[in-house]
Length: 435
Image (cartoon, rainbow, N blue to C red; front, side):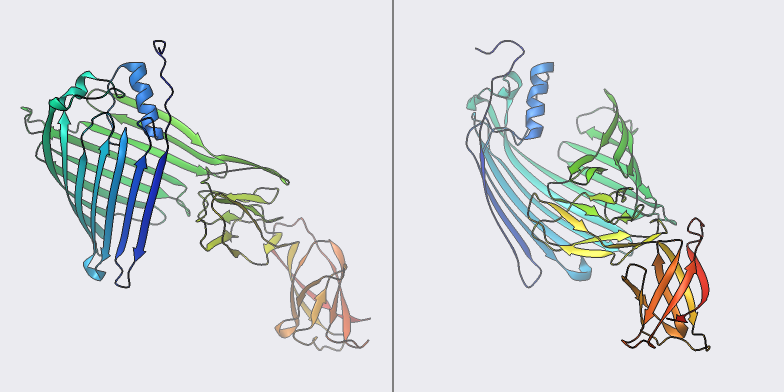
C-alpha cells in the first residue's frame, strides 16, 4: 500500500498520428489521432493538478486526464477580404469508465481597417458523472450515475489598436454565453520600445450564472501583468484577484549556454535555437531575439528557430559599438530539430575613416584601386573623387593604394589618428606619395 501523503508511481506512453495538407484553394486540413497506453499517462498540467489534489484535498478535474483515444479534425479556409472560416471537431474517450466528450466548433474572423473581430460557436456533448464528486482522480466511476449533457456556447471578440509612437496598445473585449452562464472580459495590452521589450496587460471581467439571484454587474475578477525583456532573460510580475482568491507572483526566466568561447546568458530558449558569434560587435541587437544583445565577448542567443525551415538570423547594428562593423548583417540557416546552431558573423574592427586622397601632381588614384593596410590585408578600394573608406585599428601607419603591377601604379598614404575620440567618423585629407 502507498503511505499517506504519498502517491503511487504512474507510467504510460502516447502515440500520435497526424496528417496536414494545404490545398491550392488555401484550405488547410489537419487530422490527428492519439492513443494513450494506460490511464497512467500524464502531461505536465495533469501531474501538477493531481499532486495538488493529493496535497490539498481539493478535487481536480481535467478533460485530458485518463484519456484512452482522441480524434481531431481542423479545417481552415481563408476567404480573402471576407475573412477566415475555421471548423473543428474532436472526440475523446477515457479509462476508469469516464464518459466520452465530443466537441464541434465553428469560428469566423475578419478585420475592418485596424479593428479585428471574431465570432465563435461551440457545441459540446458529454455525460456528467455525479459520481465524480465522491471519487478521486484515479478511481473508476459508476456508470449508473451518468446523465447526458449538451451545451452550446457562443462568443464574440473584438480588438481595437490604440498605437502612438513606439507604444503599441490595444483594447480587447470578449463576451461568452451558454445555456448556464454568461461572462465578459475587457482587457488592455501594450508594449513599448523598439523591440517591444516592455509589455503589460490589465483585465477585468465577470461571470454570472442563470440561476444566480445577484443583479450585481461589478467585475468578479481583475488583474494584470508586466514583463521586461533584457539581454539576460525576462523579468515578470503579475497580480490576479477574484471573489475568493488573490494571487501575486514574481518570476524570471532565461538561459545559460556553456560553449568553447565561454558562458553566454540570454532569453529562455525553445528546443531549437542559435548561438551567435560576432567578434567585436558588442551592442548589436538580435532581431526577434526577445531582448538578446551581443555581449562584450561577441556572443548572443537567438532563443527560437523553426526546425527544417529557412530561418533568417539578423543583427541590428544601430546600437553596436562604433569601432566595428559587420561585413554582412543577415544569414540564413536550416537547423535540425533540437539543434543549437552556431551562426558566425564576420566583423571588421577599427575606427571608421573617410580619406580624400590626391596624388602629388593634384590628380587622384583611379577609382576601384585596391587599398591594403600595414599587414597586407585588403580593406577597401578607392571610390569616386579619390575617397577611401576604411576601418583602421592602429593609431599610426600607412595604407598602400595599388591599381596595377607596375612600380608607377602604386602609392602610399601615411596617417595618424586619435583612436580615443568619441566621433564615430574621422575625415582626413591626405597625399598619396609614390613609393
